[in-house]
Length: 309
Image 1: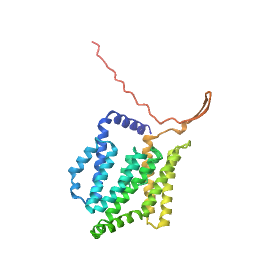
Image 2: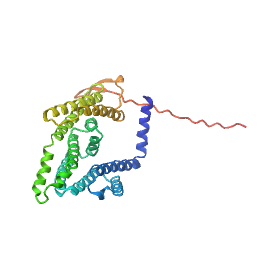
Image 3: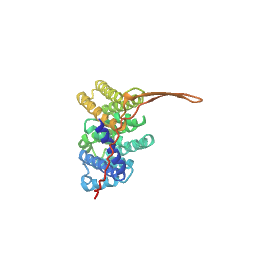
Image 4: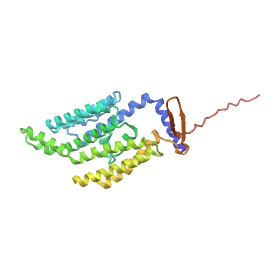
């Protein structure tokens, strides 16, 4: 354990020392991965599939605020939608604009939640994001979680139905809009995941703030179980064919990854918990103090030996 704690402290020191270089580099890698994934999943506008365009866009995002990365990713998606049909682009623009305005109003700092949730869906561990959001963010992060789910399903719907939408009568625009909107609004699976992930985020947030030992670990486990139960009930109610086996495996992997996040964000020693009581003129205070796990770095001493003639 002391080795891991020392490794954690060294990583923190390294990041704080070179943050001015590491932060743009990490943003570049994240943006490149997002744009590349969008092109791989959609790819209908061939000009955007150029590696040069992806590199330039990612390089631009490395020097811009994180929220602009969401905007640029949305532009990429809308251009691919436009290559399918103008109606897809209009519906997508209306949805993304509404979501961005609400997101910017309630949770403007949860950019990573929005952009990482579709990627987590692709990796079959989507519950990881609401668990981490409940551990590290505020209750308002449910807005970002919900929008991340909606974004994934909008992209997935357009991808699956691209051929059908393109084959509809070009002159009958109303039918195209109706087909797209009815398909999105009638997606019960998307609704189930929105409800489940929002509930999971709130459950994890409430439990991890309790004054009990191992609150973060309990919050992860209860959140993962709650998510699986809600998805199962939703599947039984609407017959959405959600894979329960995949959900269980993904929940286990998500909890293990969340434990790694906990190691860096909230690593304490419950065996040395202390209870302190004191008072002032107006209040009595009862404080539970839990020390953080830390390790004393070894100091190297250099002895200079001079020869005596």
